[in-house]
Length: 436
Image (tube, rainbow, N blue to C red; front, side, top):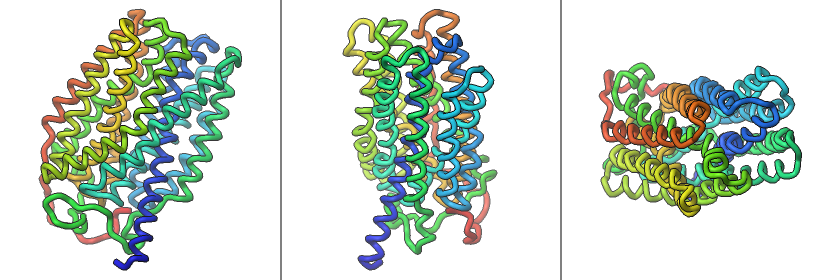
């Protein structure tokens, strides 16, 4: 490849990473701000924590269903139509929710519309990076893209916090209008900078698969049914699902835990919560580099990703232990945030890296889209709702944190069971254009 084409390939690859950064910024913007907005929403509208959290849980349920179709669109037409749909529904999700007065309207605007928007973003952002960067380069580049998530956690948490201060009981409505503009603008930019798979432009992906001595050129073309007849994908699903139950419970309940169980003012609890995002801005790319070094060290990508998936939920357990001690010393709350930022940098991207290492790039959108449907349809919905429910029946968020800790432990056990290869049932298929 000549220097001009190599520079163009590098430029396109960076555009893919930027588009993914913007996508996860918007995706996690919804998640990060909900933990703050649900407190004034509950007080203003007179709803219980379980009622408000149900809207978020429904968002994750529709997110899961939409993610499956996003993967199919991605494999066939690329990222632009997916990001465009997300821009429209993402802007409407916040904007229309700011105008609701009834519970069913809330479930529609925040549950359905926001669910469609966010469901278009996760599979698209992760898989599009994987299609351009493989092997020893994937985690590093995904770490850069995934840094958009903690940036949202940090920046949008403060945008929301300042929008609420001194604005009266319904200030959350104005905060949502501001967020709707930010989400729409960011996703329009993602549409403009995104690129399709490298082969469309006569290019090859970056990176080298350990042990092969070359890039990921020739791959077995997995059918979805065939892939799901092997344990590798189910092991990945169970590892991710159980981790997500714990993770989303923490994200949706931790601000309320500090405020109600520990007695912190909401502004202080929000400030500590934003620390996860601040640390994550740096931990995402750093842990990506570390993950790729582990892959190089063991000279097997699937093994390297598996090792990191065992370490990730273990950090979740440690973070919960420090979180439970927040009342004895404020430093424990900050330590918990630091460790959660490490967890966050490992598991979500690592599970896609493992799946891509086992099943390749060609139909990864469909395979991972269906996995996301299963995981996000169960894990976040269950975890976030249980968090609110346990508080309602016990009067304390401590039991919710214990539940999250148990979920992380189970995730570790499933990660230990992950195989390094998946058995192929058919010979190599023809080179039809079934991937993006």
